[in-house]
Length: 403
View 1 (cartoon, rainbow, N blue to C red):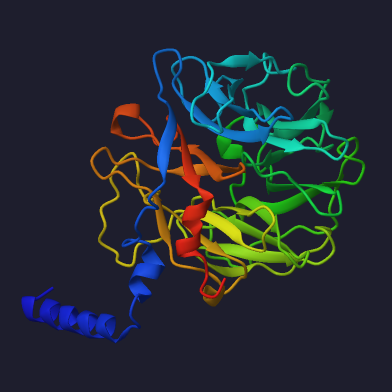
View 2: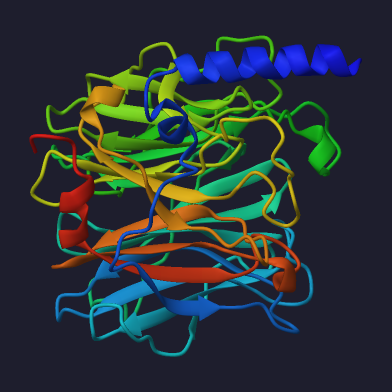
């Protein structure tokens, strides 16, 4: 391109940018978001020899006030999603400030499976702790199981299969929810079989959002009447890694990552049995998951995600790539007007950390966020697990106006 043409385009871009409303670019990108003053890391689980990856997990508060955290601890020197892993637990007795060492939880079938991961811990209707996890038996069989504990995590029941058909269902960590009605809901991405060989190329990586429901506290499961498909031919991702949050009015807000620059959203008015047609949401995003939960006793939601930058020239440096920064916001609706300003959760431009797969857990006065945070010294962005603690009082400064 000639220098005169470049100058013309630059001047045109500057004029367009200047015409945008104040704060438009920052809100779109999150690039000027500031961290909350009380935000701090309370646990770092770095990879090591024979433990190539520590990643996705979930929390639950025990009846004596301690916090139980279970996560995927990979064994060996491979950090691939299909590499060998075990599920390890840690406990905090001081609101997440310090943590015990690992206790390995033996999971039926993991010795024969390719991998075990994607934990959700959830208090069930009868008071038991529900321990959900996925077993990857092959590239044609990835399904979720539920075990229960009636003694606060000391022992666990035999597993219940949550997905009767042998298919490849991806469920993220910390995704299973219990609705106000008591119904349990698992959001999953179905990846269809395209060939018979047991290899990753036999999968269709265009996800179909599927939902599994239980109305008897997890003892039996059924698939919802409707699935959701991304209504676009220009995608190789489809609807991947879906999540669901119940809004204050009882409507279920579903969301999923795509390769179209935004999280797509879909809604259910009947407890997850049927859904609206997916459409672009307010959350710009690379192919990376969004996490969202209701603040206890409030109509407000906490969302954590990776935004799309407001410019096209940011270098994608390994291992972070496009999964940086990690930002958050407080809101209570689906439009920009119902959300407060974006705040920074994490960013490190010296070791180029990448952030994803956030688990959220609210304690009395704080929220714990556990997420992958691998940097250059960790070989991959999924290999390091970080737990961050933020005081809930800090959210007052970033809540929507008038709330």
